[in-house]
Length: 288
Image (cartoon, rainbow, N blue to C red; front, side, top):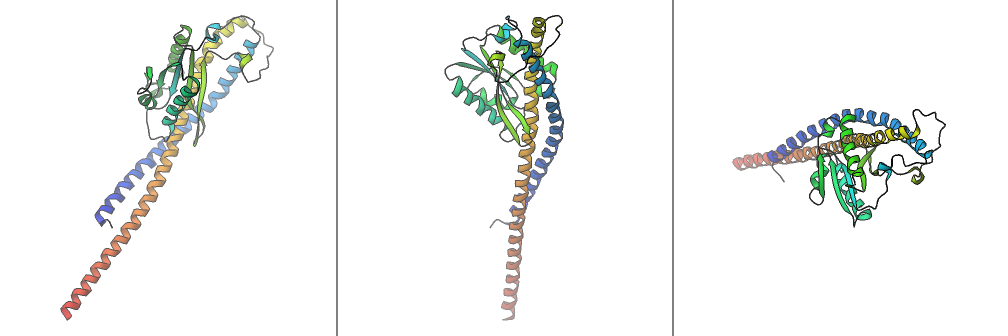
């Protein structure tokens, strides 16, 4: 059995770890509330914008927006892997890497695939096996629509210039604090309304200046909003995953500390018993 000093050191170490994980859990819980409010208020706007674009597109016969809807033979694919800059979030980041690898294996096995990574953790792993043309770790330090728009414009340029034939987002979609869903979402080319599984009802609008002009303006804004929603989803998912992971870590540390306390008390009791027996034995020897 381990000596008392060793057990005391282990108890102190586990208690210190438990304090850290408990503090991290509370910090993540506070950040989660803000991030969850942000994504839940953003989704209705983003969904309505997509619905409006589909309604407008359904009533057009021309090639409006063809720069972004142009379906080409897929020879080069760009995957945008969205992770986090920090760890200690359970399987949050590793699931992104697994999702990207599964996507390549299932859909793009014989296609050139490059990456843009948003977030440090997944990028550190992906760069070992794949080509990463850009890595952005600053976006989550100041997650605003303007900063997001710069990245979205870069992605749009890479597609319209013909550098890549398809661009796909891979991120964690927020469901609740304990559940994050790995989501693969086509960014470009835009899926036409006729190919969309969603049923749209064309509304009777009055257009000024024209349908074509409105769609030309709406498509870039819709793409920027799509990326922003993915980043907001990932941010909320990160805090939820970290809060859950730290909650489990705190529970495990508490359980381990209790076991060590029990072990310490048993060892201390055995030590006291041995000392009493030694004293009694010594006294009997002197008396004899």
